[in-house]
Image (cartoon, rainbow, N blue to C red; front, side):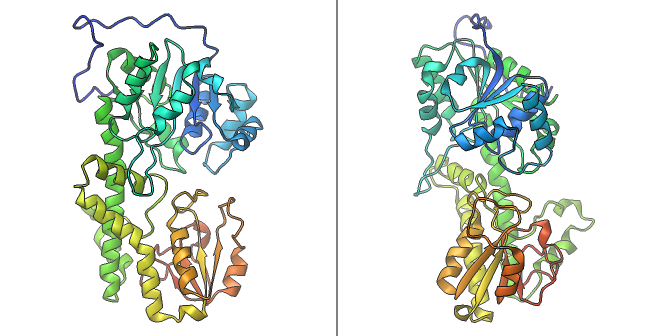
Length: 421
């Protein structure tokens, strides 16, 4: 295990004395995952069940719970489907919409994100409100693990909330660090950050996550909260840098991807420069705005990254208007997921692109080989046949080397004709 970069703390009371845990009730399961049918909670539940734990998924989505009862994965996640079928068949993973499940397990993992409102202000009360709804089911002796990104200070808020309820519950913030599409690998391969205020909470969280990974990093809850926000914001800023570089090169008629390749080949100090493309999804933009709010809106770098990344669809349409008569054209968008290889459309900038084009073009058609929740999608062959211009929205492998006589705007370079608009 990796030692804490900070000083471990003991509960209030006699200095240096760790209070013994209260006698636990007769729990019937090892872990319950609140919000466990989503992209973050379900891979964790499956991995813990595969590691031998008895796991209950508690989720308000009746459709997702029914699918899990039949051992059907509600979304794409490579490597998860076969394991889900096995652990459900062996009785190690069950799913329910009954909040009473919260009280059935020693370890309660909460996977409920902190949203931002229409004014980009974070809502720090989303998790406390969700926990309040299940308060009657919490038991003394449980460990409560906050797993999703939270606004800094939410862990302390939850600790106070539980104390006011009179519950003897240990609390830890252990942020998820996985990328969609790599969850079943990264849950085991990546170190787990454990943020705790007491030695007992630290040791119990360590015991839980040691089922998955041998490398643990111990910090305070506040340090863990910022570690998660810093990680996602760092990625968002890197994507914004690449997108700004793309705009600079493109405005001069130059191919950004050729320039990026020249920079990165055999040069390790620039090997992490990403390609240009839409930077969105359920975390990066939201977490950058949470960090901006935390810094009293003095985070100019984060706001600049937002303007660049969120402005890329507008930039592409503006450039397209200079070369094409869009008002007399049918434009097709290839890929509506928020990133390549995913079926997740949450916060996808392809939908922002569609809204802009619906105002500018004669018609807009969309297609995606993976997305299943949008009934407006058409088969790729129909989009290719009917459209006068194509724009790649998500760089799915299915589009790599696509052969078509229709002009393609491809900031990702997935088609392979270079990156110029």
